[in-house]
Image 1 (cartoon, rainbow, N blue to C red):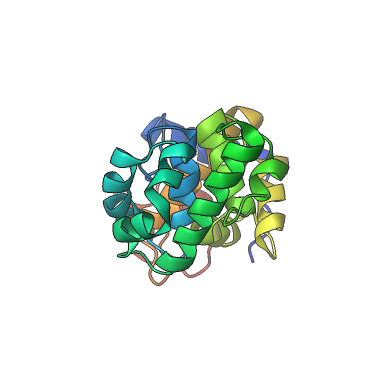
Image 2: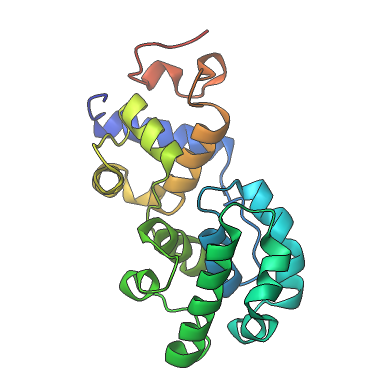
Length: 214
């Protein structure tokens, strides 16, 4: 684990990320807050590309919890059976849709606790929905962010909650809204797991990773 970088270095890192891509977006396709919840819940242990391929047809016929309930569990399975753990995920989609209809009037709640109470929705999923769906500067820490945070020293931590706290504590507030998108994209395409592409890295000179590649 790298040592926590100082304020000025972190500000420079995110200034560079912002200059390269001012408005980074999540890669999961969705049409509203509800389909975002479903897409993120389906993305556990699956790729965004694989989820998008499955949900295009699903969301064309079921973009509200009411429509999803009308489709039913078997109907959901037909659309998502190319995704890992699809049977369990289909059950969760139907359960969370029922809760949204019965307890929230069909609307997606905008509190972390309420979101985390939904089947198949954990802290990371809740944070994604709060950030993308509601514009809240919440930080969804996945394996990419955990790796980048600890390699670089931007937001080191022993677990995902510690990394989330490090982002909130050390990244300047004007970069908070897009912070997790910049970090995810950097981890997905540059600071990859096995052999990071340090030669193509925007922040190579500021990063504390000792085993840099060419």
